[in-house]
Image 1 (cartoon, one colour):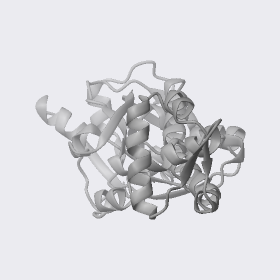
Image 2: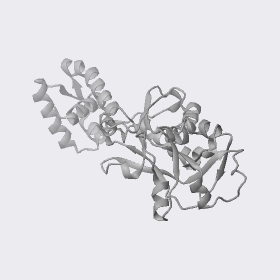
Image 3: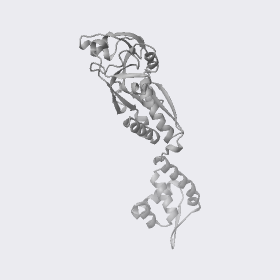
Length: 294
């Protein structure tokens, strides 16, 4: 049945007058009369009989009043997005992140979430998972913290910030007192490198050095940024790392690299499936605010 017929029946039950029901529905009187005819055919009942003051409902119409009002209320609730209250939110927000994004983005974001929406639980899964984009499509992952180069065109995406690289070493490293490191000295020192795939001894820094006809010695390759500060504090190794990680690491000196090393952009990506959900939309807006202040 056309939902508009139920709306007309509800208005007629309230108004007990075809003209007033038509005004309430913003329709003409003939249009409402035609709808009443269709209602009578659908329910096989006159539904209303004429009286001196208008129309009076039949017993069948009175029986229909409560269920029709309930149906219309449920439909209206279904079509009207519920207002989202972060203070009362209770759901799990799943983020896909590298360990870099875990420190640079998720850590400050979590502090904001705990302040504004303490009932939201946060699950962090690896961003390197080959099934990440299938997880986004299924709704298993709400937001992926990745780069523009790794973001498929069918996802929604927004730039969070641009990152640049710096050179770090322990604070009492023999070269920490230098205000500026030469490229010769940079290449002479032993380096540590983060390789997410594991075992690689070359990265973006080596590509930049090769363009200058230079080469460095990478003595250590690890799979995570999390362990790197501890290794640097306990050795003479140096490393080229994202600036946001260097700023959060204790006991390390930070120097500008002696050559231009291309940085990267961090992006938030999400699927159309969660694009219009009020709770996820609020969570993304908070993420954008947090990253805008980093």
